[in-house]
Length: 385
Image (tube, rainbow, N blue to C red):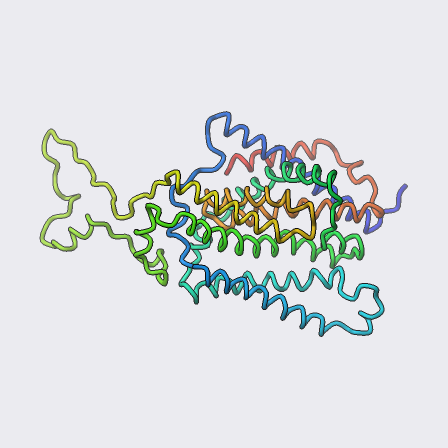
């Protein structure tokens, strides 16, 4: 009988999670094919996913970038200064593994907290401008998880083809897990890749950069004049909508309300259309501008990962999917969950490889009916979206 160790238990747990991820991918694609088969869209195309164009301009985007750089340099100096010099000199790589990923995680957390505050101070941006408004957060997260499960096979397939042509460069997370695997390093890797990195990257790239590039690319569109008259310092949720029909009743208090006037016999009462916020139909020029913003954002996003070549090729495709989902839904939480789901699977696979010397066949004693039950539960959960 094999001896049960902590490494074998962790290996079994991670292997089970990876298998459940595969089940989720199959169930997500089955759900998407079912919707397409019944002629229903996978994502509902909202006519106006955002209340107004991004109120920030070039200087605000530069200010956020400078904030990230300043936080990075400051945290690195403080972290390196707090490291024991004697212990650092005893190692071949004084700042490797956890010492590289920990400052990045701190910078990510600080940027998530301070970037929205900076936008509020510089241009009056609110939460809805970033796509963080709404009460259906549970549904947004579910859509993001399904999107991540659907995107993972295609992105990883492109990466598998790319590494056959170019020699892959290791990611810092992979180097940390393979070099010094501990419970702390594994937890840091999961928190960084599944929570902190998706949050900061989606706020910076989708929430700020993509929205600004789309505004610049579609300048002069049908909704620019209407939104330009709005005060960027005022949150739309605090201003009651009042159309011209409501103004007529307010200007003439002696007249009866329209709802109190009896209809003329033989005539059908037609309700006046709401013209307070006319919908902005996206024409061909707007669609081109939107795609330009998504593609340019993906180019920038992928180029910042050039040290892990050829990963930027697959990352570019992932960024395109994230940009399209964000533009269609208008919810930043959806793309954060989508990004975190993709990163989580990749991190779990790396963790499984790191635990391989300590592991044993983890699924030998688990009944197959348990996985059938998990598959059924995932399908029922998808139907609730």
